[in-house]
Length: 414
Image 1 (cartoon, rainbow, N blue to C red):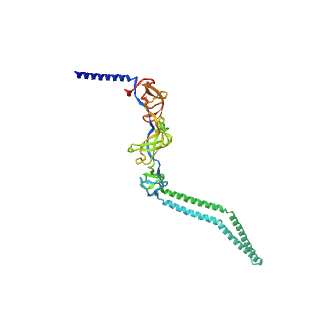
Image 2 (cartoon, rainbow, N blue to C red):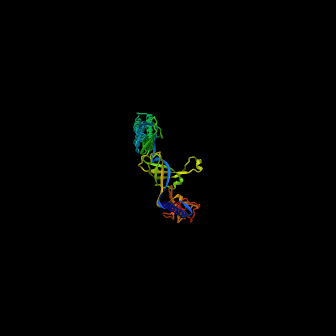
Image 3 (tube, one colour):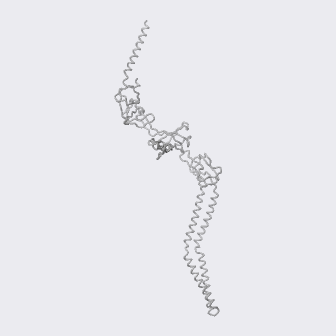
């Protein structure tokens, strides 16, 4: 009997304690029950994520300026080459024959120039000298004929003939001298000099063209593709090889025009990708394009509101062993970062109809409205600027029914 009484007393005590707890709990709830989070300081960063493709910073197609048979190949696909390294030579025998012919023509023209400068009117002068010799002989003949005529040893006809011969030679000498005096020797020399110069220019051009039969690498890099016909004959201005500098890479992104304004040259970038085996690579924003282009190629789609994009180039830090030109990749671009600032979840921000923003804190079970502005944000939290204090309880998901002065109870206190 005594044992039953003790048990009954214990049960009664337990019931009283439970009742008091229930009553006490009911007395704590005031108004609406709200979920809250505490104001805290921390670091926050703003990032833009996008996708793009890895490309070589320098790539060139090797072409020939002439159509000719390949003489010798010095490289193959996959080889690494340096700038100006010999890649192939073409058959240059016909070009070398043209050069030899041009050299001979130049020597002939130079010899003609020397003769012109040295000789000038040589033939005319020789002719004049001969006329003067004949003139002296004609004078002596005329003198002898006249003396013989006086002595009766020669007829008048013979004397007149000697006189006519002398007169004719005198006229020929006058004409020869006029011809020499009127001949423009300098004009002939100038014309021959021009012929020499033309021959020299022709030879220089042929020697310059000879260099086209030796094909060298325009850059340092790796031969990633070759297109050599089975006949071994290369066509002019057709791609023979493609060389890329695969040690210096960059990433190309076509970014939405609305995000481009947040970027700056030098922004750090983290590069990842499905094909990169979980590795992460570093880079920086290298160049922001100046021209926007429609993200949709169809003009009709463009007119109906397609988004414009701007090309962004991201340099990739060296030291990677997996990134290759042509691979797709993801870029996480850090546009801003702040430390020791107030950060709150987006769910705490209430945007009013006029665009102003505010938060609601709980003090002594009553709502207090604080107007704020927001700064940078990530996917989950945002920087909040206003009259905040660390440790304040901020209401999550406030509505228009959340008004200043209203009595509330924190859900975590129940």
